[in-house]
Length: 171
Image (tube, rainbow, N blue to C red):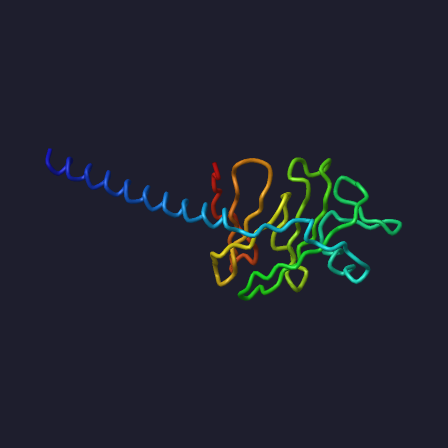
């Protein structure tokens, strides 16, 4: 009976240690999110004719008769935001398509392109923050939206794309 009791105590202590570590990481992520500088379409500039090559790289964004249309075929003016994420990626270009009818409560779709116009992230969001934390030398990103949960995305050099690392409950 004693070995079983020892194993149970060891297992319980291990679980408590893992749980405490997860809570500490979650608390650290929460603090990082709370102190993040959020950027949105308000800080972005309207796309111009010099952005044509960049806009061609955005999936589902089309241009007809001199006007751009999002994936819901809504006429709109994309916006451009530069994001210095450091590391091997350097500066990304965020193309923002604002359309609450198409993208719901988040209000916009963000497409992040590297310097070769490769899509490294795309989804709906209301805002973006470059976080202090890094993976593979590149800053993590968070995308704010409707609701109390905030995702944190980390760069994966192996996949050449951002991957969901964790979701932080901010309440």
